[in-house]
Image 1 (tube, rainbow, N blue to C red):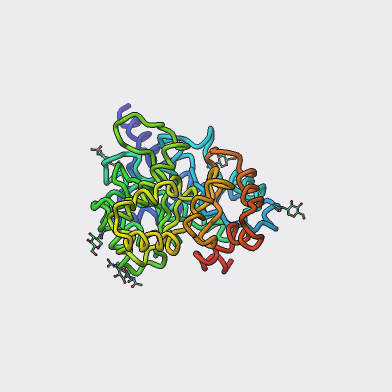
Image 2 (image 1 turned 90 degrees about the vertical axis):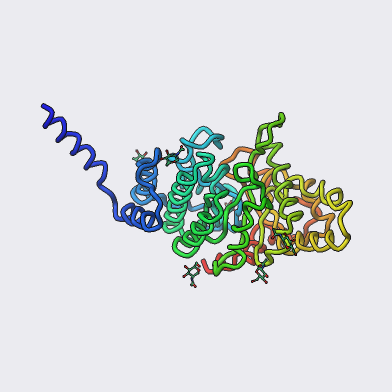
Length: 372
Ligand SMILES: *[C@@H]1O[C@H](CO)[C@@H](O)[C@H](O)[C@H]1NC(C)=O
Ligand SMILES: *[C@@H]1O[C@H](CO)[C@@H](O)[C@H](O)[C@H]1NC(C)=O
Ligand SMILES: *[C@@H]1O[C@H](CO)[C@@H](O)[C@H](O)[C@H]1NC(C)=O
Ligand SMILES: *[C@@H]1O[C@H](CO)[C@@H](O)[C@H](O)[C@H]1NC(C)=O
Ligand SMILES: *[C@@H]1O[C@H](CO)[C@@H](O)[C@H](O)[C@H]1NC(C)=O
Ligand SMILES: *[C@@H]1O[C@H](CO)[C@@H](O)[C@H](O)[C@H]1NC(C)=O
């Protein structure tokens, strides 16, 4: 009896370990980098999800044929991540098929996928877990892109706040997996951008040989202890502004000159705070900083940003060529079609400027997308 039982166990264990070549390669590369992705709570679900991308291959709907928009703010939320994330975007996980429907309905030709908050920080404080989750989500995103290169590209997921591990992962995600930007959050486990603990990461990116030094700043929920509107609609806006102010006041923004930034949601509450923040600052510090907001920072349209909020930015002479289109799918933070229509209807943009927001400005920032 015990022998048969043991044999059954071995058989079951063995069949669970029949790995596709894709998964074997992913495991081998992770092992070589000292990352264990095989013994995590999500391992088998993640391997299934990656395999299913090939076996359940999704064909493009015909509606994508004449699509032209480029969406820089869109989140892939596969089931294995959906099941462990603290704040879910919708009732069901993201799929390539749902993404294609969304793109066809809005005329989006290309989506730059990123992971939603909290990124790899699902197991806060645990560097081992963060490295593993960053790696497997990078592999998942890379596989989506590999199967649909014309429709998708992706932003590297990092295990920040662990700066050294994050630098190594970003190098891997860009060099080996082909990520075209780096997805960050306004704070990583309470460490706001500009916090000295993150400086080695920014210094490393700035001086690296990375093919892209574009950092996407997505909001996170604040971690402060006093009562807050604990919800993305409100606090995300303040957190975005806090991140830019942190980068500015620490001079991370000024020192690391080779890094470009995309601020989500038109910069969130940023326009409201700029003048006040610099009240006691040297005038040249203000002009240098605002000049960077005009040249090295881009602003996506996700959220209720048009027609009103975005004019706060434009009041600081932010060139309209810094404005990008983002939909925030699959997060249901407002009607996607009306949000795009508000850009199309904006009476302060010329037709040419609108085309810039919808695709031209992204093609300048990401020239590799023109090759499709
Ligand atoms: C793949 O397709 C099968 C059969 O339709 C389905 O049961 C399974 O849930 C799909 N997997 C994913 C990850 O979509
Ligand atoms: C694509 O073109 C077809 C035919 O002209 C049109 O019906 C459809 O609305 C267009 N789709 C988009 C997203 O513009
Ligand atoms: C950290 O995560 C790893 C991998 O998931 C796990 O094995 C370990 O027990 C975790 N450590 C703590 C202190 O929770
Ligand atoms: C870029 O830098 C990394 C880390 O320092 C190094 O491993 C890699 O070989 C370099 N790549 C090139 C193309 O120089
Ligand atoms: C930026 O450089 C200044 C010196 O010019 C220094 O005081 C400051 O600490 C630096 N900040 C960062 C984040 O590197
Ligand atoms: C960031 O990189 C740029 C371009 O290589 C360089 O000029 C600048 O000095 C770097 N900043 C720091 C603080 O090293």
